[in-house]
Image 1 (cartoon, rainbow, N blue to C red):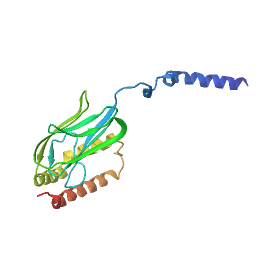
Image 2 (tube, one colour):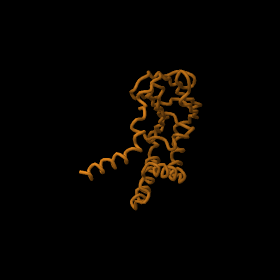
Image 3 (cartoon, rainbow, N blue to C red):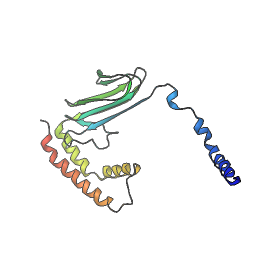
Amino acid sequence: MKKRILALLLAALLLLPFAPLAMAQDDDETPGVWEMSYVMLINQLTGYSHNLEDTRTTLGVGDKIQVFYQGNEPADVVINGDTVYHFDAGENDYTYETTVTAAGPLTLILKTATRELIHRDFTVISSRDMYRETLKESLSLKIKLETMKDGAMHGFPVGNPFVYPFLIFSAIAEFFGALFSFRNIIK
């Protein structure tokens, strides 16, 4: 009996450092402003998202821009100074998608009443020029290494012996996908 009591006391003593975490105030109890937003850029030629889309400044005619917003404040999507979409406040995922129709400068802003969440400036080029750029990007070793580093940060098994043949095969497949995307060029 004494061993059981001693074991219970020892277990309670081991759990004592976690008491402040158990008594901490939950974030759900404190109201505040929260939001999540991001932009996806879809290449019209290949049907996949653009390489390095976080820092990309060029788009092609026909490419798609998807704006995702979730938050408890209403937000507006502004393209070239015109409000094109209004997100209501709420807890559901909302998406706005538009297709780039003309070459030239394009400014995308996602803003709430108090601040800008996203501000991106793009140069829109013709679909034919985007084909050449997509083909160059499919051959770029620098972009492949950036993609591999990004994958390594998300649990990509770098020590796996099957990774390198897979990377070579996927690079070849991406090149041929870009090469034969000429049929999707918008005239």
